[in-house]
Image (cartoon, rainbow, N blue to C red; front, side, top):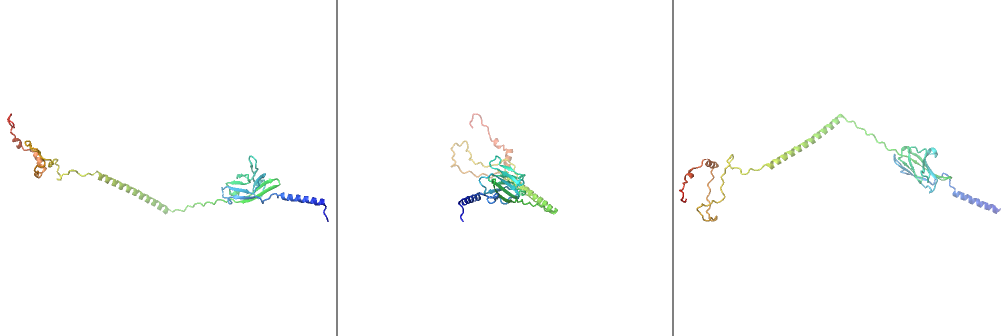
Length: 276
């Protein structure tokens, strides 16, 4: 049985149209192309969390972020529309959260808290008939609670021992400092006394002698008499006789107090005009 030529041509056109539609059609709400990366993977309390969207097309109309299992107005965090002066519009689920949207579809949650844990979903609108979606689970860990410091009971005996030990150590330190100061003072005083002491010069051989006169032999030669006018040669002079031993100093002192008048009596006046 042969197929008419007109029917075969109509069938070919309809088959080509179907293949073209199937090639261009993308199921709405596709999840396969988008992926969300958490940075960091396990956020801590008061730590910033970046939800980076991977695989978003270069051109799109807008994208919406949701917090919850369902996507509707009550769970919307914000809407981002590129090209506007203020592209980000907060939703009803934003509340007191600090969230920043980026043109590539990502969002930054600042100072994450345990109450921010849950399911985060993003919906990227390519055109009215094509919306791409992705979701991820976020769990913000709480900081470990610090254990309270328990004060151990301190008995009266321990307190008394601590006080007595502190006093003993303080007394020992004070005594050591005082000993060092006193020892240094004694050393300085003895050093000064040693430096100021001087030996006695010209001390008398006779203890207890207060006589200020002292006979000493003259080291020079005696001058010859006036009648002898010959030159004196020191090399031709006879050796000096030995000096008699010194008499006690008290004898010279007595001679000064009681002079001998005999030498004065031997002087005889000469008559005038007669050479002496």
